[in-house]
Image (cartoon, rainbow, N blue to C red; front, side, top):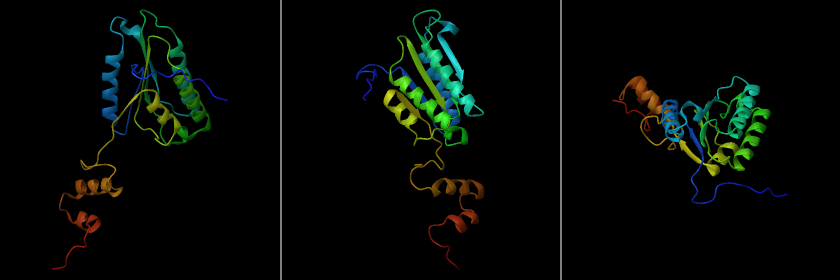
Length: 194
């Protein structure tokens, strides 16, 4: 049985935004900037619903998602536009809470809800420090809206180069650039004997 999707048409501006990544400071800063840009200027405090996305367990995570759905479905109090911000979500990562069956089911429900389109005048913003990119919710976010990713870069290089690069950068910081610890543990060639 096929479901009809009311997703946005090509060329139509996205109303769903996500700011995610392992660089917590960058994520929080960019999310604040984006919230200021997206919030309706004439509505004041009534133009933005902020939902704390931090959850200590699976039940709280499911509650946060249900609150987000309710906020999106609620008409703007004053004016014709509003922003719903699910802020600092911590249950999208590969943790016990994030892997919970109830959380995964609620995320799937939330994804289907977003896929059907937002009510007129409503914009949705999600910010999260860590996200398991293998999960279907992350993949659906990319299809439904605009996703900005901020990753911590160790050693200033490409984080995808080799798994040991982050460890190498930490060893350099720990022992200094030419320290004996780096030569003993991270050298590509064995040290020469004199």
